Amino acid sequence: MTPSINSKPIACQRFEQAAHHQLRFLGSWEFTVERFLAQGVWRTSLFGEEKRDALISQTDLTTIPGYSISSVQNVDKVRTYGIETSLQANDFLISGLDISGSVGYIHARITEDRANRGLEGTEIPLVPAWRASLLGVYHASDALSYSLGWRYSASQHSALYDTTAQRYTDPNPGVYGGRSSFSVFDAKVVYRLARQWSASLGIDNITNAKYYTLYPYAQRTFFAGIKFDL
Image 1 (tube, one colour):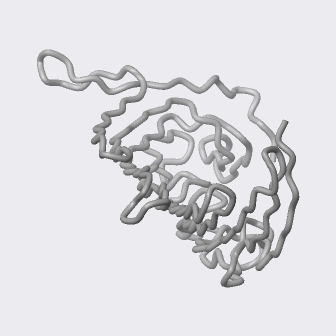
Image 2 (cartoon, rainbow, N blue to C red; image 1 turned 180 degrees about the horizontal axis):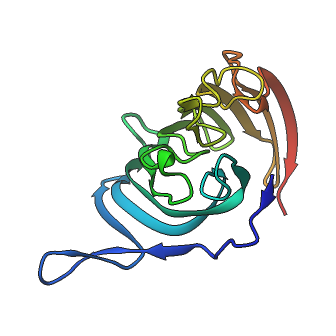
């Protein structure tokens, strides 16, 4: 796959509400609401962005009749919008328990592509629709803490929609070469030995979930460490 010699730089456009209640293009937008809690903050954001001439590997069907050229080239217009809500709180429900987490949804589509009209309305590669995370840290004492985390991502496509086969090229993302969804739990214990020394033990991917991003992610992993803070 080679870049097109006619590729142009990516341009962004923003939506802004004008005085006559029509939208004009200016780049990206975000609207955020925050609620401050007694021991934390809850934040929710709506966002959107429109880009022209985004560089994506695609097949150009408008060159020589009966032939196509695959290369990294400009897609005329792509549009994304979504919502994310996050929470950070200390001493949540019980003393010593701190939590942080977020969940977000993003809708990313090609809205104009003169090189391949069949791609209009299809998904942009490498953008999962849903992502979420949650982390809880319990401070049993000034020296000892326990943490449990959770990470989630929906599946994502590795390439653009195949307009010839009328399907995405990775219909089964949960195999080698795919980009599958995952839901993973991690745990860690940290003990402060002295003012600058601490030791830790933990497990990543506790449930030994199998998931892929072209190659397999690491499965259940045990680790230990000693840390010195300057």
